[in-house]
Amino acid sequence: MLTRSCRPVARALVDLWHADERGDYDNAGFRYRGHLFTDDAGRYRFRTILPALYPGRTRHYHVKVQAPQQPVLTTQLYFPDEPGNSRDGLFRRELVMRMAEAGDGLSAQFAFVLDIR
Image (cartoon, rainbow, N blue to C red; front, side, top):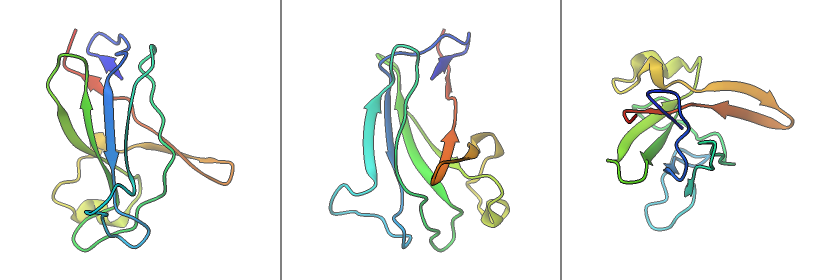
């Protein structure tokens, strides 16, 4: 998490939620939902699954980000090379995560740049 002047944003709230392996959301509980605060270097890390597709949308994570005493940013993060990206009206290329193989899974990275100095 960075400011516009590339300074780390410590203690920013990062809230993430997404569909499960069948493309369903848990609207009664908290499966595949979580939040944390960035560390002093503005870093954050989630361990979760690759969400399944659901009708009408490309694969994505929902995210809310809030730096201390700042407004909430609500957005979505997208996966590269998804066939549904070009058909999803909400898709934004600038919100695609960088992906890489990591042991027995995948690793994704996304650096949020918040409109603060």
